[in-house]
Figure 1 (tube, rainbow, N blue to C red):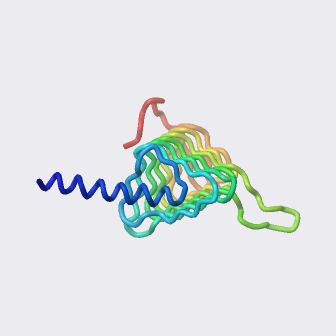
Figure 2: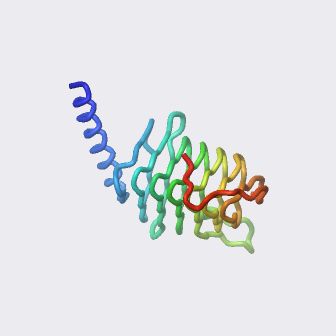
Figure 3: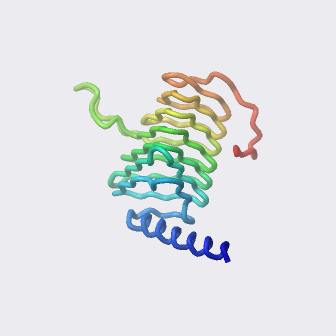
Length: 187
């Protein structure tokens, strides 16, 4: 009987989560798992969340902002930890089985001009499959992170990080090539 009651409660929670996402025009393959507070979602564009994604927020909720005509695509089995902040003004793509650590920031814009001769930069961001992003990483406009890579905690990604490598620093640079089979998935 207790298991039946738990099952009914989970149906009610899934229904609430589904309504929350539908009200924000978020398309999902199935209802993601939310642990702790649900993310704050500001969506004027397109958000697509793959199956079996997890949003983990015990201390800080995630903030997801997608501007008009922009897209955010999150792959299957992705994991977003405490305080992840994503802003898409054009396009942000996060691959399957990718994990974003605490307080990771992913922006496809500078938000404002740096100088009179440099307009606001807006460039798509692409994070590959099976990538692990450490805590407090910033991923800035135009960044491309290859499949199976690891970005060390506290790094700032400003360009291209090839597949199967460990990158660290500000700006992030490759410090090691990783021997990873193509079919291997991080737990």
